Length: 106
Image (cartoon, rainbow, N blue to C red; front, top):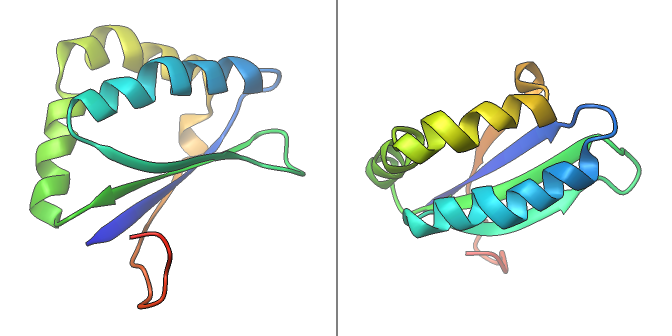
């Protein structure tokens, strides 16, 4: 098992619109395809910071879920195009992390 910690930088003035889009459209869509989203966060001191975490059981599962989400017509024609209007795609940082033995998140 591993997690994917995704850090985004929001476009100026787009924080509330991004949160609404993530929580109202993107996260529900991804969950409907089997993704496990364990957290969604905004920066306390950085207005443009958004972070979310997804969990995967294996690399094989990650690949299957990526295909199910990112190759879906709804993502490619509706959801995905709007993402670039709200975040700076060039500043996306993705880290794969593993929980320590005593981690509460599993």
